[in-house]
Length: 126
View 1 (cartoon, rainbow, N blue to C red):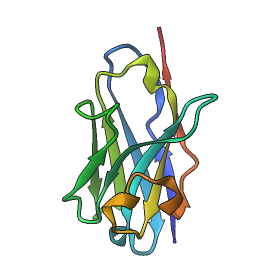
View 2: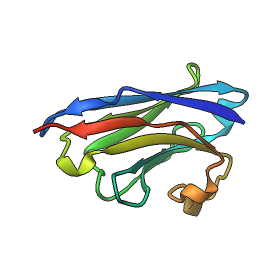
View 3: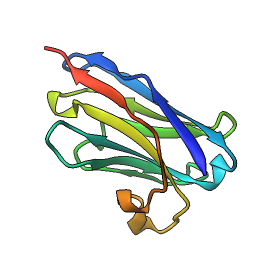
View 4: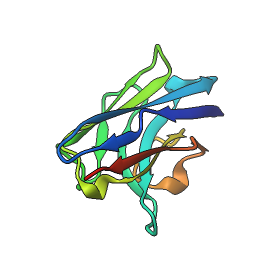
């Protein structure tokens, strides 16, 4: 089990950038694949991005592909989400999550993630 704490959210403007961080505590961070999910008001939680244990394989939702980059630093027990070219539709609470699953099919499915952070708010400012 890992405990996850997100940071880096805030107000952003059209075309702006933001980097979210998710710091893990507990044992075995490098054993987990990590994902980012988001939930906008009145909407279902949706997958954003995921990264394998060693960082070699990445997954992205179509809506963020080419704009967002997920990365991790296993020496710091931290996963990042670099968000560029932000749009109003990116407004949401962003949560990181950890999974011991290794199947590709599991990476975008929230039900396969066992540990979750509380989330950090990203709000689009006009």
